[in-house]
Image (cartoon, rainbow, N blue to C red; front, side):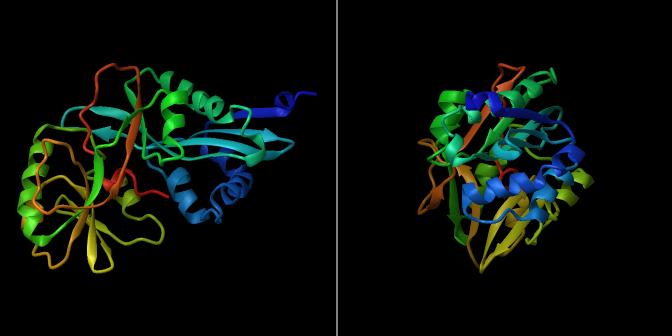
Length: 275
């Protein structure tokens, strides 16, 4: 018998159904990433998520989870509109099943469900060097190499504020932390500590800070920083900053559904710092 005939592909459409497959997903995670899956973190991302039911597709072979594609619902808003957003995370295929196109088959199952929502939607993520080519070739993603995590020194704050103000003035789509349910969920990720107050979210990292989220750039000027701030910015040829320290590239990718209009996005750490 062809092994493909024994692989069962399952669309998971609600949290109760997903919970039943946790152990199998956890086992595949350990195989794929070489570390245990933090159950509290997984529960927070998929079960406690305020944006709705999970969108997950899995492959089973003789009861074993051998493939997994999931998106974390995360709607994005601007001043007048909302787009259904989904963060693509933890794509996994067991080593001995990587010749069966499960990555593409499972992803397209999830994408079909998103497309059937009929409204404008975006699946986005931050693929690494290994996964980026597959997302482009097999899943039709658009990839930007412009985004970088930069380390901003206190003396550079005002310069960065000007860039942030310009971006915010363009009314971009981003996560809306002014919504109490979203703010409560996003700032209570297990094993982390940060808060969102006065349109500013900062997470302490050693003697520095990560700029997790910002909705009012002027708030950065009101704080006297004695150490560097890490933030995501698109660094292109038309962006000039003196002595900017690029910590590392932060590749961003996406695929659009039910719209051909390229959305104006404000990519922030609050949209990415999940697992």
